[in-house]
Amino acid sequence: MTTYTIDTTHSDVGFSVRHMVFAKVRGHFTKWTADLVFDPADPSKGAVNVTIDVNSVDTREAQRDGHLKSADFLDVEKYPTITYKSTKVESAGPKKHNVTGDLTIHGVTKPVKLEVEELGGGKDPWGNQRVAFQGKARVDRGDFGLKWNQALETGGVLVGEHIDIEIDIEAIAKP
Image 1 (cartoon, helix red, strand yellow):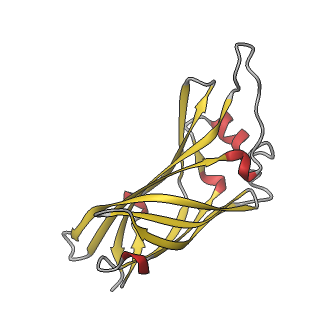
Image 2 (tube, rainbow, N blue to C red):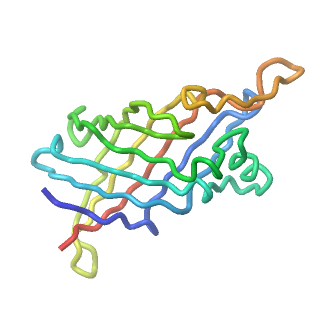
Image 3 (tube, rainbow, N blue to C red):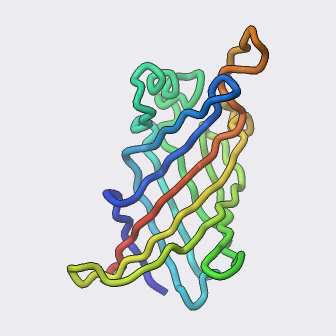
């Protein structure tokens, strides 16, 4: 079993949501920390804990970021962090795992399954052992109390109900 430090300069916690029914808006968080434990011989012994600074949301549009931070959505004043704490890791095939954990957004905690793929690993030029993973999940934002929306005169709503979460992790083994 190995404990890893996340290399945040080579990792990303991103999301996307439908906009006006037909388009997709992407964003990510620029400040977050994570602890990762992984045993390639027995991935079920692994664990991951993530804490995201909600104020670091970035969709490349300052006005939208401000709205996401407001009480209409994430309410950063009241809920400054999003957390994910794994509770179970199961094999889903070669180099594929289902990581179940408790996701807390906006003060609401729900179980969420991440579909995770091991992308590989090896020694970097400085002699450190690295591993990389990609994870995906879909959550219903209403389940976390994020219900703000606006009806469109053409039908549908401004903001989609589902948020697709995409995580890319590169981690360095602790000595």
